[in-house]
Length: 446
Image (cartoon, rainbow, N blue to C red; front, side, top):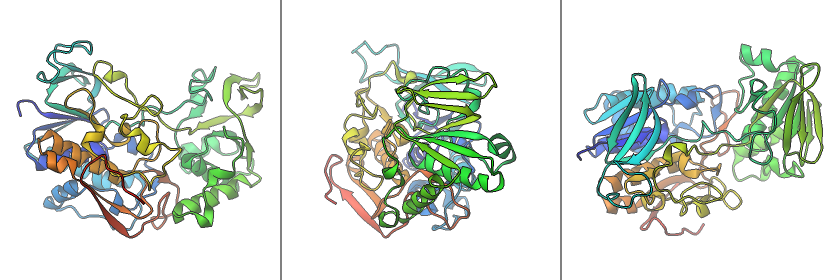
């Protein structure tokens, strides 16, 4: 090709896409905003993943790594985020960079993607002119011309706000130094100093919130003055813990049971139907959080808002996208991943045809493709990458033939808190089955 394939993001799916591109001999540039591969994952490196190593690697990537003498981790072990980066993602980025086809560039943040010489209003040339990325680099802003662009930048940079209406609560930005939007490392020295003996508000009802509750309850064992107010937007917390012993996913059930014990302990006070409206300082410097219905939580020292993530789309303003108006995911993918219908194990395999956008040669993959839906699977993302790269290479038969190995109960790309590498997370390992779909849009009965 005259111009390289450009992949945005050196996370697990971006690097998987690069590995598949390299295996097909495609010149490829990987643009990573951070200083290393998996830079976003390093920010939650203390957290253990729900999935074992066997569900966290890509076939083309491991084939390349095997050529470099890589020693694969134990397939059944559960790595932390840091172990995932150090044991797989960074070695993979290094192996890719050592090939003739792939150029991995760190400290390169994409500011915009467009069609060469055309804004989104211009129809002519969209099938013939290359894509162009404007990129902030350590040496200034530059343009990179691409034959195709694969956006695998994830959603880590777009945490949902504390505000119950999807916007920042009034005063939230002003007091952001007291708010964490990720699972804090309360076992570290800095984390212990920040949260031990404090009144912490935790907002959210998903797996991340459950992990925070478990960790803070454990912290309180050594710092008994620690107390937690758990803000839940739902009218009840009953369904937040999953099925417990009846959960098809054993480890998710274990997490739910641990979170239930924490929620029922003296440490945690649940407060339901709470949709935060304002955050303001009290005269003593502590915080007060008020909801739209007038409920108030006072004497707050710290807030942990783990209410999900949303995709960053500002750099895509000048290309043509067709996204679901609710999930902000590709329109054809959205019905497959609607969290009101699907769990992590019920999303069917899908590839290039579902992910393609009206802008020729542009694709969203990985967590970015799921928009606001939380059910993303690492193996699903690797299959997305394989299919998309096959389509870019012109191998439409391979692109349409979506094959995916999944445990019967599914796998999760989420993360959990466990004491050792024997622990699991949202999804327990199970016997895999091969799913082959002749057409990407086909339905599979389960």
